[in-house]
Amino acid sequence: MPRIIKHPELRREELLDHAQALFLTHGYDRASLNDVIAAAGISKGAFYHYFASKEALLEALAERFARQALAGVQDVLRDPALDPLGRLNALLAKSRQAKVETAAEAWALFETMFRPENLVLFHRINLAASATFSPLLVEIIRQGVEDGTFRTFDPEGVADIVMQFGMATHDVIAKAFAGGSDADMDIAIETLERRVRLYEIALDRLLGLPDGSIRIGEPGYVRAVMTARRANPSVGTDARPSKNR
Amino acid sequence: MPRIIKHPELRREELLDHAQALFLTHGYDRASLNDVIAAAGISKGAFYHYFASKEALLEALAERFARQALAGVQDVLRDPALDPLGRLNALLAKSRQAKVETAAEAWALFETMFRPENLVLFHRINLAASATFSPLLVEIIRQGVEDGTFRTFDPEGVADIVMQFGMATHDVIAKAFAGGSDADMDIAIETLERRVRLYEIALDRLLGLPDGSIRIGEPGYVRAVMTARRANPSVGTDARPSKNR
DNA sequence: TCTATTATACCGACCGACGGTCTATTCTCA
DNA sequence: TGAGAATAGACCGTCGGTCGGTATAATAGA
Image (cartoon, rainbow over all chains, first blue to last red; front, side, top):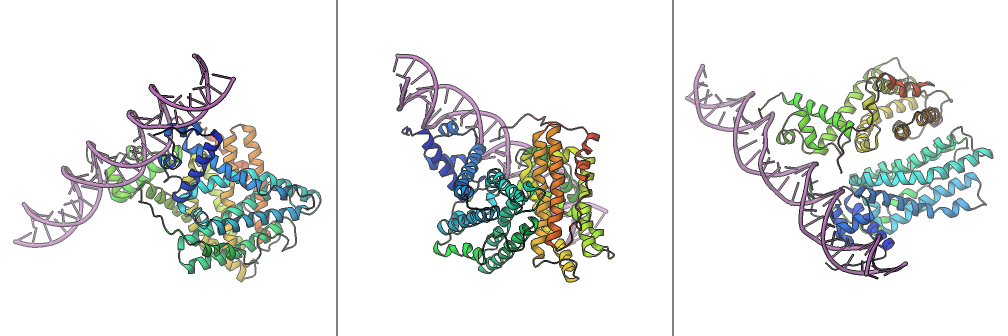
C-alpha cells in the first residue's frame, strides 16, 4: 500500500466525513473502525494518530455537528434589531429551516438519523447541541425577563425544556419511520403537527406570554418536511450484507 | 462442570438478576456476556437457550423494570375515590416515593443508574416505562378533559411531556454525580428543586389549572432523596480492572 | 411398570469480527 | 541530517454468537 501523506487537518476532516457517512448509514455500533479506515483509505495506525478511540471519533463528530449548527445561527444571535421574543422565535425558525433543508437535500441522511441503531449517535449529537445552545437560550430568556417580556423564575429550566421539546420530536418521527407505510407516516405527521402546537402553547404559558406568541413552525411545516423526500427517492432498507452483532 | 437443572422460569429470573447487577455496576456495554454467565454459573449454550442475544436480555430487563413499576401503581389506578387531578397527583407521588425508597435502600444502584456508561440501559428502561405508563396517563388526562377538570386539545402530547419531565431529571442528577464534590451536589440539588417547581407550573398551565394544582414533590423532597445516601456509604468508583473497550 | 422416544435444558470449544496496541518505516522540515 | 510527525499493517485479547453434542425430564407404547 502506497503511503499517502495529507495535511493533518484535511485528513481529520476527511476521517470525520467518512465516519459520518458510515455511522449514519449503518449506525455507530455496526460501522466498524475497519470500515471507517477502509473508506478513508488509511491504516489503523494513521487513525489512532488522529483519534484516541472510536468513542473519541464519535465525540468529535458530535462536536462538529454542534459547531456547524451554531455557525448557522450566529446572525440571529447578533442581530441588534431583535427583541428577546423575536430572537427566540428567529432561533426556532432557523432550526426549523435547517431541518427542512436537510430533509430536502439529503433525505437519506435525514431518515437514517432516526433509525433505532443510530440512537447513540443521535444522543451524542444532541448532547453536544445542548451544551452549545442552552447557554444561548438562557441568555435570551434572561434578557427577556429583565426587560419584562418574559416572566419566569428559572431561565435555565425553560431553556432546557425548549431543548427537550426539540429532542422529543425525535421519538415521534422515529415512530413514523418505524411504521413504514404511508398511512403510518400520515398519522405521525398529524401527531407531530399537533405536538408542535402544544409545545408552542407550553412555552407561551411558561414564559407568561399570550397564547400564540411563540412560533416553532407554521401549520403545515411538518408535512412540508416529511414529504420533501418525494424529490429524493428513498434509499430503502439496509442493502449491506448483514452483520450479526 | 456438573450439570444443574432448574425450573426454567427461576433460571430466567436468576439470569435477569445477575444481568441487572452487572449492567448497573459496570454498564451494559462493559459487562460482557461471559461476565453474566459466570455470575449466573451457567454456560453460553444455556444462556442462548433463554435469550436470543445480549440485546434481548437488555430488553427483557427493561420490561421487567416496567412491569414492576406498573405493579406498584395499580392501587392508584384502580382507586374509584380519586378524581383525575387527584389520580394524576397520586401517580406522581408514587413515582416520587419509589425514587426515595430506592435511594434509601440501594444508593449504589441509584448512583450507578446515572453514570454515563449506563445511558443505553437507562434509555431502554425509560422506553419500556413510557410504553407502559403513557397510555395510563393519557386515560387519566382524557377523563379529566371530559369532566372539565383539565383543558387541553392533546392528551397524548401532555402525557408525553409528563414522561419527558420525569426523564429530564436524569440529566440534572447525572451532573450532580459527575461533579462529585459536595458543593456540586448541593448546587445540583437546588437546581433540581427549582426544576421540579417549574415542571409543576408547566403542567398546571398546560392543563388549564391554577398554579399549584400539580404536585410532583413537596419542597425539600429532592434533598431528602439525594442525602438518603448517608445511611448507605458510597461504593466509590469502579473497583474493577478496567477493560479497554 | 418398564422401557423407547422425543423434547428440553444445558455444556463448552470454537468462530469471525471487533477495538485497540505496537513496532517499523517513510516522509517533512528545521 | 536528525527529530518527530505521519503512516503502515501484523498482531493481541475479548467480544457476542454458533454449533455439535450430552444429560435430564416428559411422554407414550407395551
